[in-house]
Length: 118
Length: 116
Image (cartoon, chains in turn purple, yellow):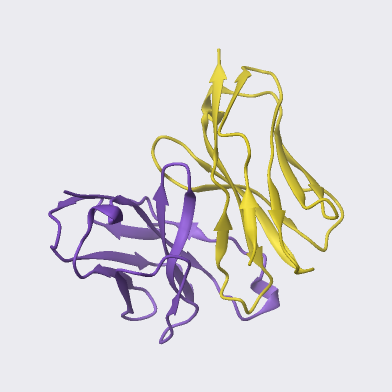
Protein backbone atom coordinates (compact mmCIF):
# COMPACT_ATOMS: atom_id res chain seq x y z
CA UNK A 1 0.00 0.00 0.00
CA UNK A 2 2.25 2.81 -1.31
CA UNK A 3 -0.11 5.80 -0.84
CA UNK A 4 1.60 8.92 -2.21
CA UNK A 5 5.01 8.39 -3.80
CA UNK A 6 7.40 11.23 -4.55
CA UNK A 7 10.57 11.03 -6.61
CA UNK A 8 13.33 11.88 -6.12
CA UNK A 9 13.81 12.08 -2.34
CA UNK A 10 16.84 14.37 -2.59
CA UNK A 11 18.23 16.57 -5.35
CA UNK A 12 20.90 19.22 -5.71
CA UNK A 13 20.66 21.65 -8.61
CA UNK A 14 22.65 24.57 -9.87
CA UNK A 15 20.98 27.94 -10.35
CA UNK A 16 19.28 28.06 -13.74
CA UNK A 17 18.84 24.31 -14.14
CA UNK A 18 15.41 22.83 -14.66
CA UNK A 19 13.85 19.89 -12.91
CA UNK A 20 10.56 18.03 -12.56
CA UNK A 21 9.40 16.55 -9.28
CA UNK A 22 7.17 13.54 -9.71
CA UNK A 23 4.21 12.52 -7.58
CA UNK A 24 1.92 9.53 -7.94
CA UNK A 25 -0.90 8.23 -5.74
CA UNK A 26 -2.56 4.83 -5.82
CA UNK A 27 -5.62 5.62 -3.70
CA UNK A 28 -7.88 6.69 -6.59
CA UNK A 29 -7.97 10.21 -5.20
CA UNK A 30 -9.36 13.03 -7.30
CA UNK A 31 -7.45 15.97 -5.81
CA UNK A 32 -3.70 16.51 -5.60
CA UNK A 33 -1.50 19.23 -4.12
CA UNK A 34 2.05 20.55 -4.05
CA UNK A 35 3.37 22.30 -0.94
CA UNK A 36 6.75 23.64 0.03
CA UNK A 37 8.08 23.66 3.59
CA UNK A 38 10.54 26.27 4.76
CA UNK A 39 11.90 26.70 8.30
CA UNK A 40 9.61 28.77 10.50
CA UNK A 41 6.91 29.06 7.83
CA UNK A 42 5.04 25.78 7.87
CA UNK A 43 3.81 24.35 4.59
CA UNK A 44 2.62 26.66 1.84
CA UNK A 45 0.54 25.63 -1.15
CA UNK A 46 2.19 26.04 -4.55
CA UNK A 47 -0.38 24.55 -6.92
CA UNK A 48 -3.24 22.14 -6.70
CA UNK A 49 -5.46 20.07 -8.94
CA UNK A 50 -8.97 19.63 -7.59
CA UNK A 51 -9.75 17.04 -10.25
CA UNK A 52 -8.15 15.50 -13.31
CA UNK A 53 -7.86 18.11 -16.05
CA UNK A 54 -7.79 21.15 -13.75
CA UNK A 55 -4.98 23.00 -12.01
CA UNK A 56 -5.00 26.17 -9.93
CA UNK A 57 -2.46 28.42 -8.28
CA UNK A 58 -1.91 28.34 -4.58
CA UNK A 59 -0.22 30.82 -2.28
CA UNK A 60 3.30 30.71 -3.80
CA UNK A 61 3.11 29.69 -7.50
CA UNK A 62 5.80 31.93 -8.98
CA UNK A 63 8.66 30.03 -10.57
CA UNK A 64 6.72 26.78 -10.82
CA UNK A 65 4.53 24.94 -13.29
CA UNK A 66 2.45 21.81 -12.83
CA UNK A 67 0.97 19.07 -14.96
CA UNK A 68 -1.83 16.75 -13.97
CA UNK A 69 -0.76 13.94 -16.27
CA UNK A 70 -3.65 11.64 -15.35
CA UNK A 71 -5.67 10.84 -12.26
CA UNK A 72 -2.68 9.24 -10.54
CA UNK A 73 0.14 11.66 -11.36
CA UNK A 74 0.79 15.32 -10.63
CA UNK A 75 4.21 16.78 -11.46
CA UNK A 76 5.88 20.01 -10.38
CA UNK A 77 8.40 21.70 -12.66
CA UNK A 78 11.04 24.29 -11.91
CA UNK A 79 11.97 25.84 -15.26
CA UNK A 80 14.95 27.87 -14.03
CA UNK A 81 15.84 27.00 -10.47
CA UNK A 82 16.76 29.78 -8.04
CA UNK A 83 18.35 29.54 -4.57
CA UNK A 84 15.06 30.84 -3.09
CA UNK A 85 13.45 27.59 -4.21
CA UNK A 86 15.64 25.55 -1.87
CA UNK A 87 13.05 23.80 0.25
CA UNK A 88 11.36 20.53 1.10
CA UNK A 89 8.52 19.80 -1.31
CA UNK A 90 5.49 17.72 -0.38
CA UNK A 91 2.87 16.22 -2.61
CA UNK A 92 -0.52 15.33 -1.13
CA UNK A 93 -3.79 13.88 -2.32
CA UNK A 94 -7.39 13.81 -1.16
CA UNK A 95 -10.41 11.74 -2.13
CA UNK A 96 -12.61 14.55 -3.44
CA UNK A 97 -13.29 18.21 -2.82
CA UNK A 98 -16.63 18.69 -4.57
CA UNK A 99 -18.87 16.63 -2.34
CA UNK A 100 -19.77 17.28 1.27
CA UNK A 101 -19.81 13.55 1.98
CA UNK A 102 -16.05 13.50 1.55
CA UNK A 103 -15.39 16.92 3.00
CA UNK A 104 -13.93 15.73 6.30
CA UNK A 105 -11.44 13.40 4.64
CA UNK A 106 -7.83 14.40 5.30
CA UNK A 107 -5.05 14.89 2.83
CA UNK A 108 -2.48 12.12 2.55
CA UNK A 109 1.11 13.23 2.15
CA UNK A 110 4.17 11.82 0.43
CA UNK A 111 7.51 11.66 2.23
CA UNK A 112 8.82 14.84 0.65
CA UNK A 113 11.65 15.84 -1.67
CA UNK A 114 14.56 17.82 -0.24
CA UNK A 115 15.74 20.17 -2.98
CA UNK A 116 18.89 22.29 -2.69
CA UNK A 117 19.77 24.90 -5.28
CA UNK A 118 23.30 26.24 -5.28
CA UNK B 1 -7.97 35.18 3.45
CA UNK B 2 -7.64 32.67 6.22
CA UNK B 3 -4.57 32.56 8.44
CA UNK B 4 -3.31 30.12 11.06
CA UNK B 5 -0.97 31.11 13.87
CA UNK B 6 1.04 28.90 16.18
CA UNK B 7 2.70 31.21 18.67
CA UNK B 8 4.90 28.60 20.37
CA UNK B 9 7.90 27.75 18.16
CA UNK B 10 9.17 25.23 20.75
CA UNK B 11 7.66 23.35 23.67
CA UNK B 12 9.06 20.82 26.09
CA UNK B 13 7.35 18.22 28.27
CA UNK B 14 8.45 15.56 30.70
CA UNK B 15 7.66 11.99 29.77
CA UNK B 16 4.23 10.92 31.15
CA UNK B 17 3.17 14.53 31.68
CA UNK B 18 0.58 16.54 29.75
CA UNK B 19 1.30 19.33 27.28
CA UNK B 20 -0.93 21.71 25.34
CA UNK B 21 -0.01 23.21 21.99
CA UNK B 22 -1.78 26.39 20.95
CA UNK B 23 -3.28 27.35 17.61
CA UNK B 24 -5.41 30.30 16.60
CA UNK B 25 -6.89 31.04 13.22
CA UNK B 26 -8.70 33.79 11.43
CA UNK B 27 -11.61 33.23 9.07
CA UNK B 28 -14.94 34.71 8.11
CA UNK B 29 -16.33 31.30 7.13
CA UNK B 30 -18.75 29.38 9.31
CA UNK B 31 -18.08 25.88 7.99
CA UNK B 32 -14.53 24.58 7.95
CA UNK B 33 -12.23 21.87 9.25
CA UNK B 34 -9.23 21.97 11.52
CA UNK B 35 -6.40 19.46 11.71
CA UNK B 36 -3.30 18.71 13.70
CA UNK B 37 -0.47 17.00 11.82
CA UNK B 38 2.65 15.51 13.36
CA UNK B 39 5.98 15.58 11.52
CA UNK B 40 8.70 13.42 13.12
CA UNK B 41 12.34 13.62 12.00
CA UNK B 42 11.48 11.15 9.22
CA UNK B 43 9.66 14.09 7.59
CA UNK B 44 6.39 12.20 7.19
CA UNK B 45 3.20 14.20 7.70
CA UNK B 46 0.95 12.18 9.99
CA UNK B 47 -2.61 13.17 10.77
CA UNK B 48 -3.14 13.32 14.52
CA UNK B 49 -6.67 14.60 14.90
CA UNK B 50 -9.38 16.52 13.04
CA UNK B 51 -12.32 18.70 14.04
CA UNK B 52 -15.37 19.75 12.08
CA UNK B 53 -16.37 23.31 12.94
CA UNK B 54 -20.08 22.45 13.04
CA UNK B 55 -19.46 19.93 15.84
CA UNK B 56 -19.46 21.38 19.33
CA UNK B 57 -17.95 18.27 20.85
CA UNK B 58 -14.18 18.29 21.03
CA UNK B 59 -12.43 15.55 19.06
CA UNK B 60 -10.35 12.92 20.87
CA UNK B 61 -8.01 10.22 19.59
CA UNK B 62 -6.55 8.12 22.39
CA UNK B 63 -4.04 10.36 24.23
CA UNK B 64 -4.70 13.31 21.93
CA UNK B 65 -7.59 15.72 22.37
CA UNK B 66 -8.46 19.21 21.25
CA UNK B 67 -10.01 22.23 22.85
CA UNK B 68 -12.00 23.86 20.05
CA UNK B 69 -13.31 27.32 20.86
CA UNK B 70 -15.12 28.50 17.73
CA UNK B 71 -15.99 31.98 18.95
CA UNK B 72 -12.42 32.60 20.05
CA UNK B 73 -11.07 30.91 16.90
CA UNK B 74 -8.81 28.74 18.98
CA UNK B 75 -7.86 25.09 18.42
CA UNK B 76 -5.37 23.73 20.94
CA UNK B 77 -3.98 20.19 21.07
CA UNK B 78 -3.56 18.39 24.38
CA UNK B 79 -1.23 15.41 24.59
CA UNK B 80 -1.69 13.33 27.72
CA UNK B 81 0.80 10.83 29.14
CA UNK B 82 3.50 12.11 26.78
CA UNK B 83 5.79 9.51 25.27
CA UNK B 84 9.25 9.80 23.73
CA UNK B 85 7.72 9.00 20.37
CA UNK B 86 5.59 12.14 20.57
CA UNK B 87 8.68 14.29 19.98
CA UNK B 88 8.11 15.95 16.62
CA UNK B 89 7.05 19.12 14.85
CA UNK B 90 3.30 19.69 15.13
CA UNK B 91 1.35 21.69 12.59
CA UNK B 92 -2.12 23.10 12.95
CA UNK B 93 -4.03 23.39 9.66
CA UNK B 94 -7.27 24.92 8.40
CA UNK B 95 -9.41 23.85 5.49
CA UNK B 96 -12.51 25.48 4.08
CA UNK B 97 -15.67 23.49 3.54
CA UNK B 98 -16.14 21.43 0.38
CA UNK B 99 -15.93 22.90 -3.11
CA UNK B 100 -13.03 25.19 -2.20
CA UNK B 101 -10.35 22.91 -3.60
CA UNK B 102 -9.58 21.19 -0.31
CA UNK B 103 -6.54 23.39 0.25
CA UNK B 104 -4.84 23.33 3.64
CA UNK B 105 -3.51 26.46 5.32
CA UNK B 106 -0.81 25.63 7.85
CA UNK B 107 0.53 27.34 10.91
CA UNK B 108 4.26 27.82 11.41
CA UNK B 109 4.64 24.72 13.54
CA UNK B 110 5.58 23.92 17.14
CA UNK B 111 8.56 21.70 17.83
CA UNK B 112 7.83 19.44 20.79
CA UNK B 113 10.61 17.76 22.72
CA UNK B 114 9.94 15.05 25.30
CA UNK B 115 12.37 14.63 28.19
CA UNK B 116 12.84 11.17 29.72
